[in-house]
Length: 179
Image (tube, rainbow, N blue to C red; front, side, top):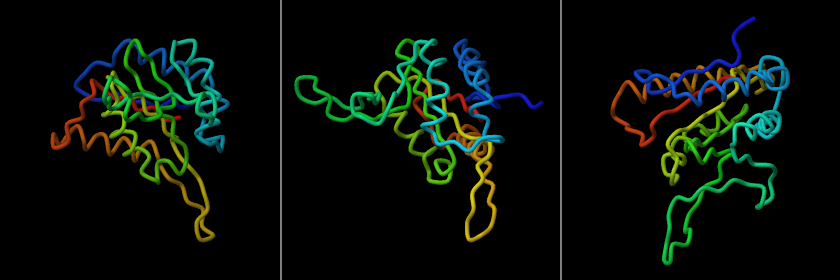
């Protein structure tokens, strides 16, 4: 059986921080529910499956679509220190500054990965991005079965970013997880 989840830490010249193994184990613990080779899930369904393990690791986790169930992180402050701009994340670990985003199927094709990279780079107190994408996503288009290799495609993007030195991200690191 293949290792689950697949993962890679960036920048590749750095040793993964201590928090990566417990987070990877959290995904591993719900493999039967979220493995994209066996399940067709939305990102909300995948996040719901891993939520108890994330909370046990002291992450703040989105619990629904209502405003008070979302996790908002500030980006800009205005007069009197009031939050002027904030972005929502799927989960956040305040102690380590880890923003977690869980993407599914169309997310990888709809540029969600790019959005996650930019928005996390702008969050106050975010030091790391943990980005979880499906290993593969299957759908039909024009009557044809299409397989999108989301993890591979995202890994190729991150490899290019870290190899080129043309785009310097203000994060200490990124953990890419393929579920």
